[in-house]
Length: 138
Image (cartoon, rainbow, N blue to C red):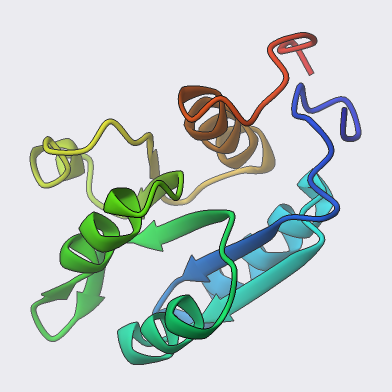
């Protein structure tokens, strides 16, 4: 397990993190590294995220729902979900569950913390059978 997170070893796993706000993205990237992910692909645009997804092995994705200019990550999330990649959403809106009702993915409301990101990662990976069910107390 990784640093008392209740998660299996993530040091060989790659997480794709899509966040259009640069400072929030940097903060989230540090949290994902602290949780134990071996590689974090921080993307600020949907196009960059798609390029990474097309050219790299992605083991988990944390996706901001609203990307500005009326764009969302939902179609991209659907593609990742259909490929069997565990996902979680991040949103600054409390009603984001309405947008993600087609997914069985956790939603983390911003501002998030280490604990809320860790919990979302754990839930998403456990749903996909990737996590270690022991030690969930962290």
